[in-house]
Image 1 (cartoon, rainbow, N blue to C red):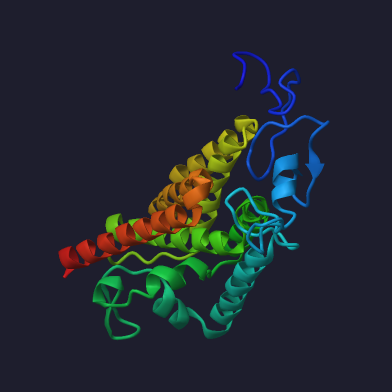
Image 2: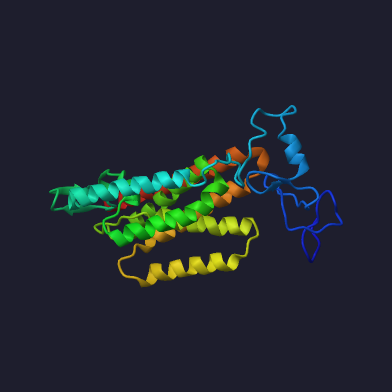
Length: 288
């Protein structure tokens, strides 16, 4: 039990105040008890549980805050995302505007280049995803890749590869869906900003969950939102959709009870996906 003032008490030595918590069970532990792990420190009970005495075969596998497996490369999925963005960016430079017209997010419009009606509302749902890894201008590409690299490097090790992949997919999708819902149907948009803002929202939740100093995180988020609403040509819908979607997903990932962790986590991700799909269906019906 934590005192009214000061730091939490070590659960094994109640007379010792400590700011260190076990990375697995999150109980307060003091320097006398803590055992160094690949990520942070663990309490003696969790180390004993992970020794393989009558527990699941993977009980000794280090786990992230969200319950995922700790990987040696904390930016593995982030590197894959950057590689996909780079490959499409090079393809756009080679193929020109036609590729952009085919992959960017368009709600519902007549494209004179293709000579046909195009858009998500015309059945081209793939645009909701392809637009999130598509860039045309060098500054736009570099800025988003820098955000992916820096913030992804903070978030990915806390979630694990599978959960981080779900986060990026749902953040990008949520950003695209909000743009499809509120932007003009003939207004094209593209870029990984929805994913980046999803990571920003995740960073806020993680910092709060781990009791970090929130001031740098809040300042960075506020500046990002300020640029969103003051710079011309920015899809604020994609930014806000990604931010909210990412925050909701990670909140569910890191606050799920340990006994039903996977069930709660994947159910929450499924609900976000269903909400996005329902919004697309409703908006499509309104446009067509």
